[in-house]
Image (tube, rainbow, N blue to C red; front, top):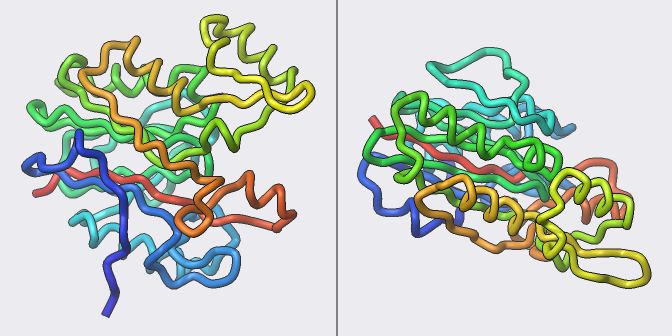
Amino acid sequence: MSQSPPFASAPLLSGISGLSHGFFGRKGGVSGGIYDSLNSGEGSGDDPRNIAENRARIAAALGAKWLLSCYQVHSPDVVRVTGPWSERPQADAMVTNRPELGLCVLSADCTPVLFADPEAGVIGAAHAGWKGALAGVLTRTLEEMEALGARRARIRAAIGPTIGPASYEVGPEFRAAFLAKDGASEDLFTPGKGDRFHFDLPGFCERQLVSAGAGGVFNLRHDTCAMEDAYFSNRRRNLRGEPDYGRNAAAIVLLA
């Protein structure tokens, strides 16, 4: 019998009637090796049968009939989900007002954000790496939820496990390019060793959501790179020279 994998949740989204959500890491699945064990990434090199079983476990844990993920490309693009699909669309966020459709974003250091307007019955999920966040994927998600009847002041947003500033070391060229597009973010870069800086990606996402007028924002503050037992991390993979990495899942669903 399949076991229900553990997951973290956001108080802002918990206890809402007709809504289920969770931030899933690497525990509770069937994959082995570098994908041990709840790898949910369809784009990884893991055995597709293992990925399918892991995703089925996530769907069952949330009460979703389907678990849908996009082909993520670090874009600001948002898709409106009206039913299950056979081919993943290229986008980095999804919104829906339909029950049983689990919106699932994958990450391994990038920032997953789950959204809900409980009164309107509209939910969303976004994958925000620094490129997508800077390009406006989070604001675009709020806009697309509004197009389905949500009100921005009622939308609750939960930032899930992502690379923390202590683990996210960047060079001066990254900082310069980032500040050229968003000069108000200078305080999110703190000096590191030599010419390096540490960047607060979840802090940037939180600031964007607050500035955009989201009704409430929660930041889980789980560092994927530092919390090795709990989460997959692409940066940790790179530091170790491993050939691939598993993906964490963040998902939300309106229950039937």
